Image (cartoon, rainbow, N blue to C red; front, top):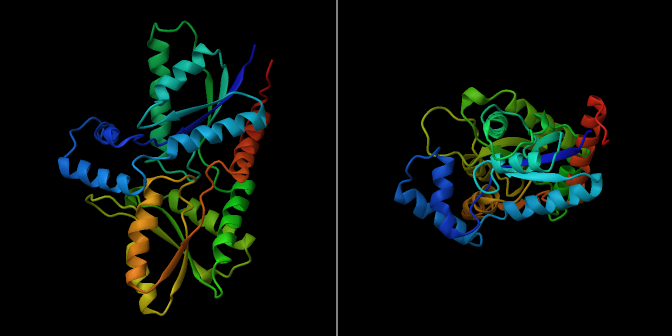
Length: 309
């Protein structure tokens, strides 16, 4: 007897300011967290409302997707509760036998999607070895990337269109994604460029109207993907470009890297340089993202011949 389900994976975040030290310790792999980092992170979260909205958004998305596909949808967070391991245990207890896994990040990189897969594999082995449940975890079908999914591209394009409508002239469009070490460039950067090209083709925009930049680079050694948006904005100002649309295609939901890094830090920089910035809305739990994920699940189940029995 087959029982099908879906597992959505997301990064996680603190639900209160008091959660920040534990969250940072988790992100750092259990290492101690310097107090200045706690203080700065707390300052940033306080400016966006005192918590990460990611868990709430992910739960809303899961609920809407569950209604759309009529099968149970679970969520697992990489760095906060509900942790991936806890969700795998719950799915085993619920007798789910096969589950499609989707990371809420469309573009593959071994540092991000690869890390989610490693966490999931570890969780499966933990549940198998545990005596807490006699049930076996599901067979997981892991979707590694979905950056070309038509409904996703259409949703991003529509959000760019909303932002463009706020200008009377033709602004520069900057697609952004989280910077990664140069060693992890491919296929991450190629996937990002594919998405950007598909979006601009949908909007019938020439190549000179858009560019790909990176954001949210941590204070870390080594070479990281560039150009960084905080360097590009001043350069655009010097060339006379005064209107910019920022489309953070590396993310699907509101969280700190969008609400602080772009909406506060980059916007303040742009304002100081005389550049007007409009950020596109995030997909969050929109109809477009629900439809994209539903199509991913249905197509993957068709390919593998999976049916509820």
